[in-house]
Length: 445
Ligand SMILES: [Zn+2]
Ligand SMILES: [Zn+2]
Image 1 (tube, rainbow, N blue to C red):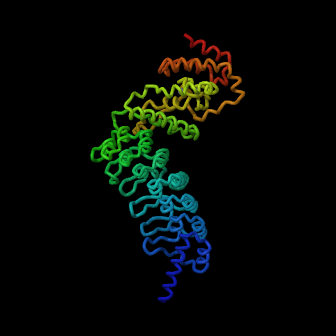
Image 2 (image 1 turned 60 degrees about the vertical axis):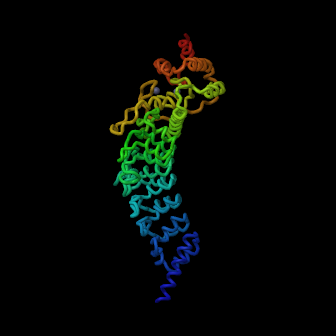
Image 3 (image 1 turned 180 degrees about the horizontal axis):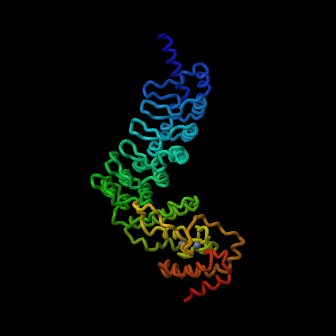
């Protein structure tokens, strides 16, 4: 008997080593000989072969084990599933495979009461986070628990995945979680300092990128933790000077991602990326101004140089009919009006979103006031369009120069919108050419 036991132990060790090394042949051979051994686990952590394969990214072995109908949700000593270990180690193929095999994404370990989502966020594996979130959308979890509830699930100390990502400087995960409905102002229970919001935790870790993301999503700079501290105080205490400057409640308010846009469910991906880029650019300009302690409305000489360099190039593209400054990059659907990403944002960024009022206001096209069904990236013009448009390339330039000499003329631009809208599409692709030719003349003094 004694011999048998030690023999079994050796075989067990051999198996675990083979799994760890990804030695599929040996694993298969052991399985042929003794399938029962696959129910054994390691001595200390009680990890199964599946746990080991998941932690060590041995996808072939993992797939083999699952094909032998090994249960995907085995628990180790800490009640951790193979999926949690794969998420911790960022083994995306294992995460995907386990979820395909039916692994439960809503299991809590006994260490901190965390889920696989917490672990992916904590360790900053945004690819794994994405896979888990898509699984949550489609799986039973969404139906039974609710998707938002899953995204905001708390560990034993009251930390959501967003808290963990902010604390550990995982700005990509912060971004992804916010996009998926993570509550930006949630306070922790006992995690970190009690009552901390994600912004407090980002201030603590000194992550400028996380702070930017959170502020752009409407995080409140004035929210206090249980000790009465605002994020600004936390950043100061931790000597994160730059973070503190942005978190200082007396510095310029950051531009906030408009809640009305958050809820346009079919906001085209490219359009969203463009808008996000515009928002971040605008906020960076504010940041620079805050950091230089200068007035951010002052145009930088560099910018105007850049502008004149690009003049000939940009005359090939449509200028935004609102600011007369940037190229049109966003098309409003159904009406087809064009404007730049900055203006799209500006028109939607009047107010900070109020978490108390969840009903988003309906977005309307600034040209024709028809409701915006979708925002898409404006298509680049074809050669044909360009030749047709040649007649009003010059006038556009003249609006531009008027604009730059006249300082802030976006409101002047707006006042012209009435007639602009009447003329049809902002691009002029549909409006008759003679109508367009009159347009610049009417603007002459
Ligand atoms: Zn514009
Ligand atoms: Zn319109």
